[in-house]
Length: 508
Ligand SMILES: [Fe+2]
Ligand SMILES: [Fe+2]
Image (cartoon, rainbow, N blue to C red; front, side, top):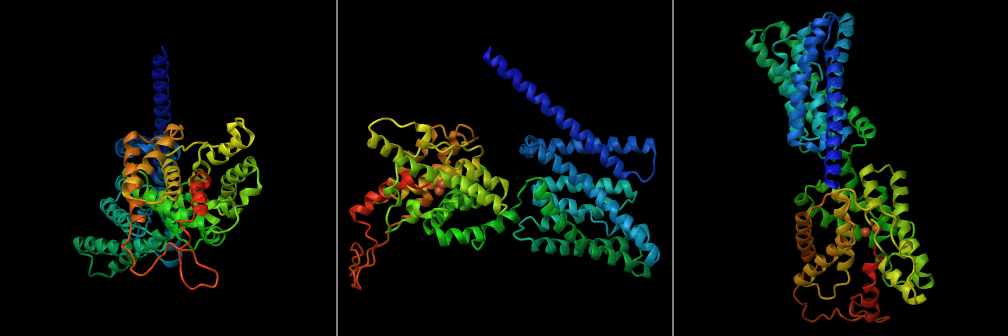
């Protein structure tokens, strides 16, 4: 019976999603058909609408096959539809301006006007916001639709090659200036195609060849300008972060990261190592490595408010928790999550980074202070007072950051970090998080967890590798006051060891 209910609800969900997707197809086909109309004609509308429905259905099938995550999230379908209709709308708008301009500058033929239309801007935006594969099909559809609208035989070929060039131009886009480079590439290729087309029509060496060539040369620059303006707006309205924005956040000179380095250097280095760990495992578990690293960098920014209460920033100084009750200490530790979200809002970090700040501890128990409260009072304190409020990780990347965070903190207590000890530690920490139910709400599989362990062990082994001894140097001594000898930080000191033992419990 239970299974029956489950199957029915799944079916209901499926048909609900199907209805939603069909509604999207009809609405966007309707608007695309309207955009193609040059005069009011019912016959034309029915024809254009039918063609749009067929093309968009094939595109939908392609997305369903190769990028099903775009179907699962309504905003991605909506964004693709907006980009498709917007590309034709933008081209029509440009056409209108050119017609108006021709009244001022003199007659500009429709063939010449065609070469300047910024159709490739759509494909370029799809590459930046989605991926190259989605942009390929998108280029195909927009080029065909533009051909229908302009009723020009060479238009689909010209726009398709221009769109493909634009997509290739930003396939490895690292900064916003790369968009201009892609635009210049589009201009160059468009000039080449127009030259070939003029050669075929035997017009290349006539006076009429100049204006189409100038139009083709300008087209790429216009594409770059439109994309540069539209990209931040689309990122903002659709709460979608492109790799360009992530790369900007990766810059360690960003104010938040600089603050973290100055106020909480221990947390800063912890975050960098967590970044290395998640990036190494990301690709193996189908997570964007760039997104993983960026979220790792910012996961603990809330610690800048009270850095001295976190063990990684207490090197050599007094432990502030000694004068506090375990309950107060745990409240301070828990507060770094809330403070992090506040700072993320203040500095306008992307929503996905904010989500990971909120979820990176899930509902973990702060074992160290819970046990301390238990031994101080002799009775079991309420567990919820010593647990982070959650939510538990809701995505693969959030789970990855949680696991790396726990493993990095625990690795600091390893006295003699041999590779087998590191492997055992990673195994123990990941299993602990898993058995505590912290991964229950994300999509990580057991195979993913095994791959994560493997990659974490590999990176940590690299970090803690042993070097050969330095003959004549004894680093295991503390520096005496006034002495010039000894540069060790007292790694063998009992007090330090005891302190570091509690590090994994306290490091958040
Ligand atoms: Fe952390
Ligand atoms: Fe944390």
